[in-house]
Length: 441
Image 1 (cartoon, rainbow, N blue to C red):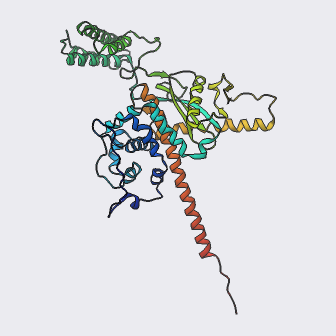
Image 2: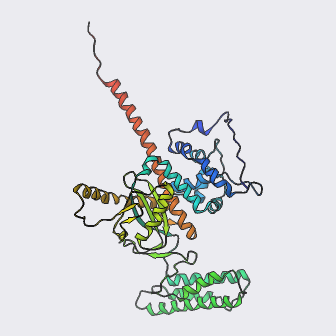
Image 3: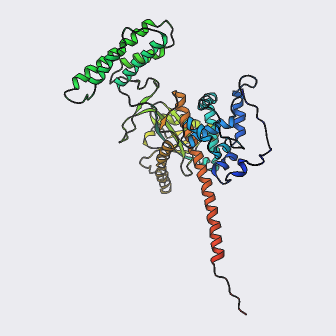
């Protein structure tokens, strides 16, 4: 049930966050710039109004989501730091300091699923709006990257051992007595698998790997026989069978049991040959530096991601961009609807010197998107995606872009106040240290 909002205009007699905090702090300024009423209007229909326990305020939940990706926090850390930070509390709508956690960390999970991809995109849209005219630039840059899922480096034997553990848990939960638990056998096999690259241990390790795979297959088949028809583990057992059947050259391999949609992507990096996750498309204004597009895709050719990315851009800013500058990975299309696609290539003789110079400048400027992606990964949780499933893939990239845009506008506020302080300081020095005229009589 949606909580009833009570408007209390009466301030505390002794203490109020609004009067106590530094009014030049970026979070203090942002709290009045964000359109909180729009979030209340859009998200309130997702709640019932006459049944159940009152929910947490919408402004609190949206504010926590923004702060989480702005400060690179987990759900648990965001909730914990909110109870310690007065600026966080004021940003989320509190007028008085509360020395307690505002909600359980799981409430953020439920809220993300409640508002869905459309709600997350609405928060992303608000971060673009706050950047004002800087986000309205017609020339944008495009690039793709990989957001890695929270999985370990996959090996066949590791997946097979996980299958064995999960089969044992299913049997214990459903009260199924297995023919053999293989506990002692697996302990011996793990000792034989050590130092598999040593010439003396190589053959023994290969046999041990084969034995582990055999044991995993036996347990899966035994569960299939003993579980009732139409049981709830059908999908999970299908994943187990697919893992046991795949080999080195198989297509659409499964690299993780809890994240079966993860793909192996190679971006040609020297330090990291393969990344396990999904592809992400980023659109970035060339000269002003605002992320105006963030979408998640399956592993596909970069040029095929442009249509959906431009559609999202038009949905967020209500207009198509004039031009998109991209690298050679996007070659194949020169124009999409009204948008011109610029890709580095030998210049046509029809272009004037001015047009060639302008395109060269645009191609050089496109490289600025690379460090932007790096900052989004290192500072706003794009490097490793902890959200589950394809839904998590989609919302993580938009929330990371939201955190980047909020950080940008906060840095802009800091610079404005720094420039004002510098001007005041210069005028002060000019007034007191310039020589005065000496009047003589």
